[in-house]
Amino acid sequence: MRAIFPHMLKGFAVCQGLFLAGCLEAVPPDLVKALESIDHDLVALQAAEMAPDDYAHFVRQWIPLRARVQSDDDLVRWPWEANDLEAELRRLLEEGGGTVARLHKERDVKRRMALDKLTRVEERLRLIASQVDAIDGRIVLGGKAVQADLLVKQARSFYDRKDYQRAIQAANQAGRALFVEASVLSKELGRYTDDRRIARWQTLAQQTVDWSRTHQSTAIVVSKADRNLVLYKNGRPILSYPVRLGFNGIREKQFQGDGATPEGRYRITAKRGQGQTQFYRALVLDYPNQDDRRRFVQAKKAGQIPSAKQIGGQIEIHGAENELMAQTLGCVMLENAHMTALFERVQTGTPVTIVGALTEGNAVALALSQLDVRKDET
Amino acid sequence: MKMTKMIAPLALSAFLLAGCAKPPTEQIEAADKAVREAQQSGAATYSAQDFAKLEASLAAMKKEAADQDAKFALLRDYGKVEQLAASAKTEGERVKADAEKKKEEAKAGALQAKQVAQEAVKAAEDLVASAPVGKDRAALEAIKNDVEALNASLNQVQMAIDKEDYPAAQTQAKAINDKSQAVSAEIQSALAKVGKGKPSAAKKK
Figure 1: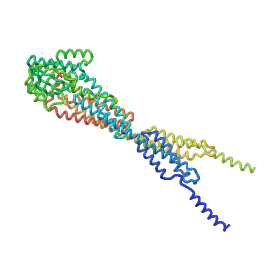
Figure 2: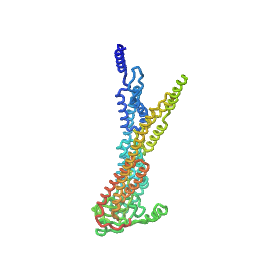
Figure 3: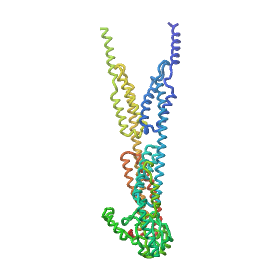
Figure 4: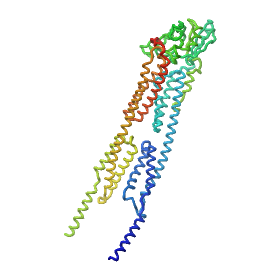
């Protein structure tokens, strides 16, 4: 027995060596690292938030496989044992890699779509704002301009946060709000594109010019759309000046305090020189005239004007108190130097005709044509 | 007698083995509950990756339990199921706590943004209120609409907070703050041009 024992020990050691030499690691460590990297990439792509089904599909396979890797049973295997764990990991690696590539592409497509929509609504917002400023039409929009502006800003914020889906949603909402803005402007100021309306205004202005020629006298014509005042003498234009109107000047005057500049045929009822007016010099007009009163009563009966409202008055052509204000409360305002020139050339009784526009290509019509775009273009 | 002595211990062992191979129902329910509570805490929104992994762990645990259930009773071993259930419960509690913390942070951020926006709107309103009356007020009439619209839009921020849509609340509040500051600057510019003379009483227009 003693003679055999050392041989038995030797034999056992040889067997153990063969055993250890024959065993293999179940999974190459770099394969596990590669899958952890896939998981990391998916997290960086915010897959759990933006593509939850894709991420859930990956982790439902990765989590149990990772647990198997960590389990003792799978640390070693015989060479002849089927290595299903490594095969499954490799399959998942390929699938996960494909998912990462696809989500990268999808995110990029979404980012570009968000940027495209955002750029368009920002541009549209700028266009509308500039056109509205050009025609002093801000008050026509009321609070809508702010609503659209806020939506555009919100879309930009979402984009900056890389939340492209919500940036697209906010940009779409902004687009709809901007469409509503353009529609409101078109509805409220559409008369400036109405041929019949323009023709009536042209007739009124021409009658005033004819009167000036017939009576060998002066007469004033104001075009609200183009914000221009022309002084005629003997039927010929002798002065032409830019003017500023009421803060709601572009609209038809309805009642006291609405900020609109009235339209119609008026006359100068009084001249107020320096020291007699707050605004350098002033030409008082006979607003409201008979037509204005008739329209006011009709509009009140029709419920278009609140019953408590008054018709208003004290509409003037005047200069500036200090710095030239952007708008008036309804009057027609000139720079003082222009006011001086005008004041010296007119008298009490001089006709003053204020019309909406004198040509189809008036400033308001041009502004509206710039904004004429279909809803789906924003 | 000898046979009985041999069979009895064997039968007893088999009986004991069969009795031990029961699914850890309580631990499984505890893990389920922890995951449900994590979901209710908003983990799918505030800790989306961790919650997805938690759900995957729960699914793996349930699969392991089902696999063991499908085996012959004597061969069942629920040790791994217990392990996975314990792990899912612990992780579920962690994810829930993490989600609750992030949700509170998001809410605090939204409330802070709303506060800043409110102050900006108030500043614009105060400027409008300080505007002169009379003919000079024309400069601000158009801007007043903007200030009123900004004030109204603060309601939307609160609605978003109430719906727990904190990203929407924050972006809306930021937009209102930015716009309010721009409007305030415009009002100040307009006020700088007027009011140099005595404010006059309002006249008919």
